[in-house]
Image (cartoon, rainbow, N blue to C red):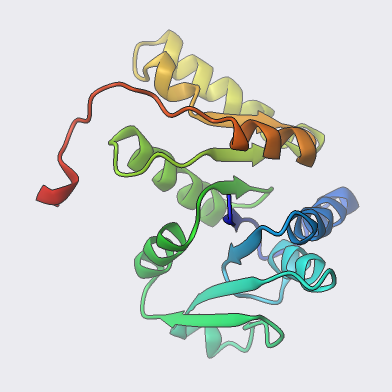
Length: 193
């Protein structure tokens, strides 16, 4: 993996460990020579993961919609800042640039980005590993919900297993490097989109 997209909150949350782990993830990616792609902001966990990578001389590419740049939250120290017109264009660009995805704690935006990547994988539009860093059990209830979806017949087990989960960065990166995408047939043909 040469580049990983990280989705995370634009605030720090209530637990200091979220910021610590975001910073450590950025540092770890830089030390592993994995470029960071993220939302381009200098606030919250987004700023922490970028700063962690930059402090280790890592490459950090931010993708930011113009309307957020006007709110002066753009990180000015990035290797590259790509400006786009919409949130959808942002996700598409982040997907195009990366070899895998990690979600840190976050709110609705983080979950929406994570689930769009999972949906695209389920539809066969990409075969990238998608992971959550389950800091202090933040994603326990989400994992339980996906298991309920399988139990209730609304999600295939093979698709639920696309979501890689770990509470340590090293283990998560190892799972991502060894990820084998499902071989279930595609529902749609990407070229028809």
